[in-house]
Image (cartoon, rainbow, N blue to C red; front, side):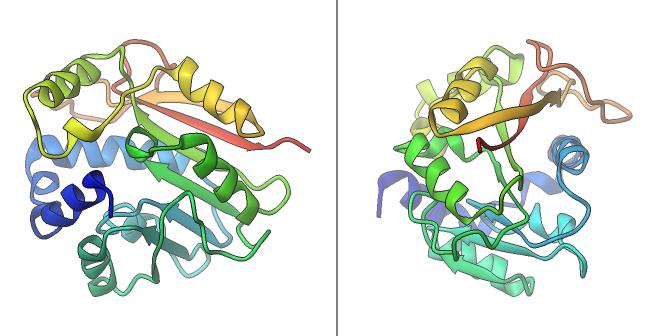
Length: 219
């Protein structure tokens, strides 16, 4: 087990506490809005690096089941308690049958992967032809990116293991892994410590705290 996986494993029991605070609730709402804008409304999906399942529990439905995949046993204990189907595995070793998924998504996962291209290719093998992959990443150029970089420099137990990216770098990873970009957008427009009255979807510029990219495998 890598050091980053161990860090998430240790944080599993208290991982969702922050999302229950006003700032965390705003972040969750913003990111869910971005995901809903890009994900299909139905079909079988998978969340890679699902953690405690906090996103899957909001996105999954009878017509859109979501399989939660994560390498942390502690995280998946929390996911299983929510009744979500879960599998212990890494993104680089996606265990799902080839061509079985109608979509897949990752929320702040690319930043922690030791080999992002290998992971993207592994996930791609499980996607049907034309099925989308949506990545959500912290925007390194934003105020949020600067905050998390500062936390990492200060030895934060989670973000000290992260590598933050720009939208261009995410596009490059996807391209090198055999994907083509379909759509890009941003959200999380409030500065760290602030809460806006409503969530917004914006262009993927420096004002967006997170960047979402919808892509599919090249034919």
